[in-house]
Length: 424
Ligand SMILES: Nc1ncnc2c1ncn2[C@@H]1O[C@H](COP(=O)(O)OP(=O)(O)O)[C@@H](O)[C@H]1O
Ligand SMILES: Nc1ccn([C@@H]2O[C@H](COP(=O)(O)OP(=O)(O)O)[C@@H](O)[C@H]2O)c(=O)n1
Image 1 (cartoon, rainbow, N blue to C red):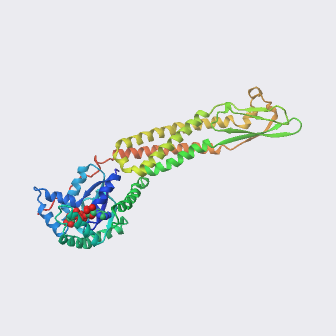
Image 2: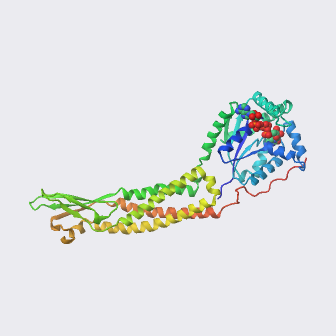
Image 3: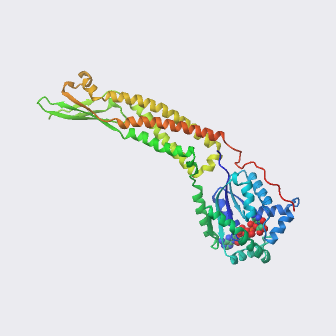
């Protein structure tokens, strides 16, 4: 299922710095800033608007405009932006705003965070008066309107702030500090917010995390393997000496030999094997390493850029394509390695070794007794892990394919009917 658009609400008293801080946040993070107050003022300034007068009435009196109007303006602006992440300032401001949003937008958006800018009345008044004096042109930046706006904030908006606090979504910011300090605190909240664990609660991310672990387990069990076999070597004087031969990765047995000085001889005796299983083993290990790298990259993308991933179809096609290729590699690699391992076991079977005609190894095989085989269990497990990886990568290919199919509208903002704006 495609991700819903994300919303961060910014609340706070008049002049607490909501607009100032939002304009700073959008410089650092990919959010669209929508100010409910600005949208209402633009609508009010539109001579053709049927609700202009009603908006003006509420703004001057510091009361709250009916949610049908505000919600429609917000929804239009979200759709028009073509974006997926919104910083909505000055909304929801009362019970009516909250229930209107819940009714129309709650199931089509995700509220990620609610920021509340804490600021005393005195500072709010001082700032708004300063804003008015600097020529804001706002009909409500005067003492009479301000006092009403503060009353509205306390009586209508604070219960909404508490509502989000109970939901665990609220983050309070001391907005009385200089703007640079306030923005620093806010950016920390945003930094934490963009790391999302949500994809790991869904099959795609969950399986990818497992794939990362199992890919490492599969190739490490091969690369770290050093097998061994052993015999007793008959010195011919009634004494025997134990011989241990190693079978190391990458199992290019033909080029691996061991020289042992036996029974006090002056010259070493050369022990060697035949056969080459390195291509099977290395193909398997290469598949494991590639899978680990791809899983690592995608886990980072899911954690830090999930929204971009969901919105950028190319990324998802690349993920789907590479996952499919790696699933195929796991099948081929595990099959080849299973076959290689059975050859390797046969070739390094100490019983077979001492039965081999003498001319092949240049050794007097009659002197070798008591063959002892080492354990190849780790390599058997690696084959099983390989097939397990094949199952996981194939399963994930299916989930990625389903996600591509289940995709929703272009910009991620749902097409929905919004209540008609109320008349004046
Ligand atoms: N931290 C701050 N310190 C001092 N002045 C500020 C601070 N934040 C905002 N201001 C000023 O206060 C006024 C109101 O800020 P604004 O962001 O428009 O508030 P709001 O959107 O909450 O009404 C503006 O003139 C702005 O420059
Ligand atoms: N959700 C909203 C937001 C603002 N408004 C109105 O717009 C006015 C200005 O809001 P604003 O967010 O721009 O300004 P501040 O009061 O936060 O400084 C408010 O006093 C309300 O009258 C509303 O009715 N509903």
